[in-house]
Amino acid sequence: MYIYYILRGMRGDQPVEFEDDIQEERFAGIKLSDGPAIVNYLVQNVHHDEWIEWTECDLTAGRPHRNHSCRRFSRLKAGFCSFRGIIYV
Image (cartoon, rainbow, N blue to C red; front, side, top):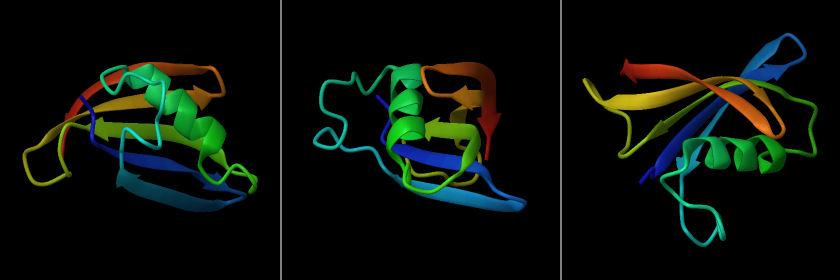
Protein backbone atom coordinates (compact mmCIF):
# COMPACT_ATOMS: atom_id res chain seq x y z
CA MET A 1 0.00 0.00 0.00
CA TYR A 2 1.41 3.37 -1.03
CA ILE A 3 1.08 6.23 1.44
CA TYR A 4 3.17 9.07 -0.04
CA TYR A 5 3.82 10.55 -3.48
CA ILE A 6 6.23 12.98 -5.12
CA LEU A 7 5.00 14.25 -8.49
CA ARG A 8 7.44 16.13 -10.75
CA GLY A 9 6.95 18.06 -13.94
CA MET A 10 7.60 21.24 -15.87
CA ARG A 11 5.57 24.46 -16.00
CA GLY A 12 7.03 26.01 -19.10
CA ASP A 13 10.77 25.90 -18.49
CA GLN A 14 10.45 25.82 -14.69
CA PRO A 15 10.58 22.50 -12.78
CA VAL A 16 7.75 21.89 -10.30
CA GLU A 17 7.32 19.28 -7.61
CA PHE A 18 4.38 18.40 -5.39
CA GLU A 19 4.36 15.86 -2.60
CA ASP A 20 1.77 14.73 -0.12
CA ASP A 21 0.26 11.84 1.76
CA ILE A 22 -1.97 9.38 -0.06
CA GLN A 23 -5.17 9.17 1.98
CA GLU A 24 -8.02 6.76 1.32
CA GLU A 25 -10.62 9.55 1.48
CA ARG A 26 -8.96 11.50 -1.33
CA PHE A 27 -8.38 8.41 -3.49
CA ALA A 28 -11.86 6.92 -3.16
CA GLY A 29 -12.37 3.93 -5.42
CA ILE A 30 -8.65 3.45 -6.10
CA LYS A 31 -6.71 0.54 -4.63
CA LEU A 32 -3.81 2.10 -2.74
CA SER A 33 -1.59 -0.78 -3.87
CA ASP A 34 -2.23 -0.01 -7.59
CA GLY A 35 0.64 2.31 -8.54
CA PRO A 36 -0.47 3.10 -12.11
CA ALA A 37 -4.02 3.93 -10.94
CA ILE A 38 -2.67 6.31 -8.28
CA VAL A 39 -0.32 7.99 -10.77
CA ASN A 40 -3.12 8.41 -13.33
CA TYR A 41 -5.37 9.96 -10.66
CA LEU A 42 -2.60 12.39 -9.67
CA VAL A 43 -1.82 13.39 -13.28
CA GLN A 44 -5.48 14.18 -13.88
CA ASN A 45 -6.23 15.90 -10.56
CA VAL A 46 -3.17 17.60 -9.01
CA HIS A 47 -3.05 21.25 -10.03
CA HIS A 48 -5.05 20.43 -13.14
CA ASP A 49 -6.04 24.08 -13.43
CA GLU A 50 -2.44 24.99 -14.32
CA TRP A 51 -0.56 23.91 -17.43
CA ILE A 52 2.00 21.44 -16.15
CA GLU A 53 3.62 18.65 -18.11
CA TRP A 54 4.11 15.84 -15.58
CA THR A 55 7.28 13.84 -16.14
CA GLU A 56 7.66 11.40 -13.24
CA CYS A 57 6.12 10.26 -9.98
CA ASP A 58 7.59 8.43 -7.00
CA LEU A 59 5.33 6.35 -4.76
CA THR A 60 6.47 5.05 -1.39
CA ALA A 61 5.15 2.91 1.41
CA GLY A 62 6.49 5.54 3.83
CA ARG A 63 7.81 9.07 3.87
CA PRO A 64 11.04 9.29 1.85
CA HIS A 65 14.20 9.09 3.90
CA ARG A 66 17.70 7.76 3.45
CA ASN A 67 17.92 4.23 2.06
CA HIS A 68 14.17 4.04 1.53
CA SER A 69 12.91 2.44 -1.65
CA CYS A 70 10.17 3.83 -3.81
CA ARG A 71 8.59 2.99 -7.14
CA ARG A 72 9.27 5.49 -9.91
CA PHE A 73 6.91 5.99 -12.82
CA SER A 74 7.73 8.07 -15.89
CA ARG A 75 6.28 9.13 -19.26
CA LEU A 76 3.14 10.35 -17.53
CA LYS A 77 0.07 11.08 -19.61
CA ALA A 78 -3.56 10.96 -18.59
CA GLY A 79 -4.54 7.30 -18.62
CA PHE A 80 -0.97 6.04 -19.09
CA CYS A 81 2.27 5.74 -17.17
CA SER A 82 5.34 3.56 -17.40
CA PHE A 83 6.95 1.82 -14.41
CA ARG A 84 10.58 2.85 -14.46
CA GLY A 85 11.97 0.86 -11.54
CA ILE A 86 12.76 0.82 -7.87
CA ILE A 87 15.02 3.57 -6.63
CA TYR A 88 16.57 4.30 -3.25
CA VAL A 89 16.45 7.77 -1.82
